[in-house]
Length: 140
Image (cartoon, rainbow, N blue to C red; front, side, top):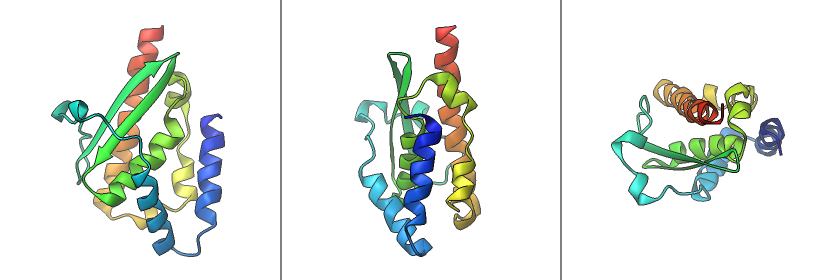
């Protein structure tokens, strides 16, 4: 599946819910299924700067595709990073770098977050793309 396919799937899933309380619960559930980062990667180097909560992300590349694992100390934030990892994991670095993130607006996520969480969301996207840039550089 392409990043766009995964993003459209996420948009469709969020459209099934009537209100934001149900969507928040869905995000919490997604966070529970997050590919959890190995404890040895829960270091200061892997913390996303700009997040109110602690969010750790680790990336590795297998068969020219970037795979992400993560964790957070806050349940909503864990759900947010789970959505992003689902969209960007197991994709070619160049696809991640060039990926559009409009799906965030289409599901209404940014407008339902506090300003500090919205800033954290932007920081998470930026960090995932920075990992992709690093891996793309290795491929060139």
